[in-house]
Length: 86
Image (cartoon, rainbow, N blue to C red; front, side, top):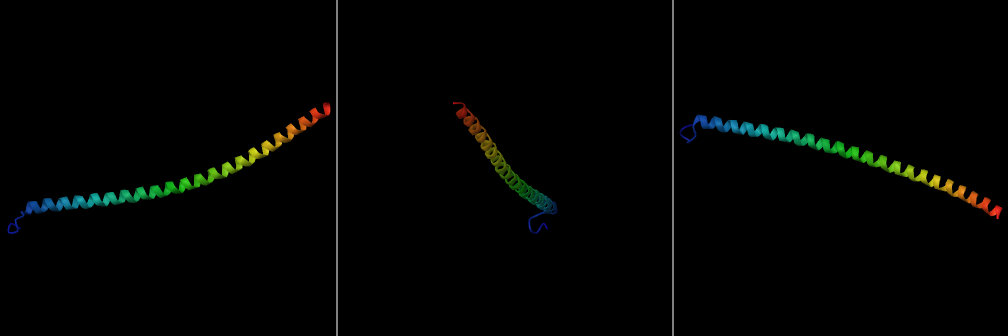
């Protein structure tokens, strides 16, 4: 190896650096894959929660409409009774 200008120790050091770099890239890819899976999971949860929220809003609006109608009818009944008194 001395003919090419790199000693055996330098070659081993370079080899170790390359192996460490490969391990780092491997860990980073695994971390990225895990993060992407987590993002997909959170997106699915968000979509489900959004749908549930929409359903709850629709139900609440229907309930409020029914209550408003019931109150309107009660008020109309009271006004009718007041008209009869006059």
